[in-house]
Length: 267
Image (cartoon, rainbow, N blue to C red; front, top):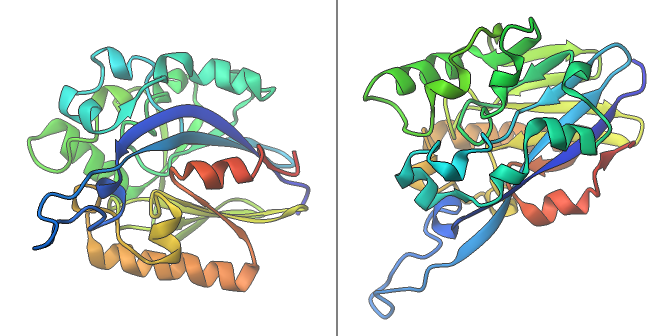
């Protein structure tokens, strides 16, 4: 295995109610029937995984027009990506020293609109786009029918893309970079185990939006949870990987955790 580095890209901020990300966060009681709701700041991030022979992008962020009518109004009201227009994929890559043409492959943790909004940049390029089988099915089912989830937009991913479908529980992208199927938030969430000279990295992704999902094992709120049972089993998988590897764990949208890594590993 050659040297691998992980560079984190800050793709902006989302504001949302904590009740979406931690189940029961602001539930009422007899003595407090109308509890205060807490709006919190969450990060949207991508990563560039530089290997000996390939440079891989993890997720593509939100479409820059998210706040200009591209996202459905009910979704933007709940999850406002307030600075999406300031964070195009091209400019955020350039800030980290990369260009779109440097990307040899893309791994999609899942196809929700805050992760798949930059996929159009790779339409017609032949760049491999890795996605789990169950995620691709559910995304099209959701976007093309009135069933499923409203968090998928066909305009994000229904392009001339070179899909590389991941089947089963694990897939090696290259030596030292393995993805893991972590259903729960959606049917096909992918996380990753990446080995770098600076230490191992575990990407939990949206299996765990914030540290409370991981450390306290509090599930995501019902609006963000496809399957409670699958979510819990995926959480135990990530925790077992951490015990075995001693890796740092990166959560899906936790701003404090993201900032604590100061740009990545071995950068």
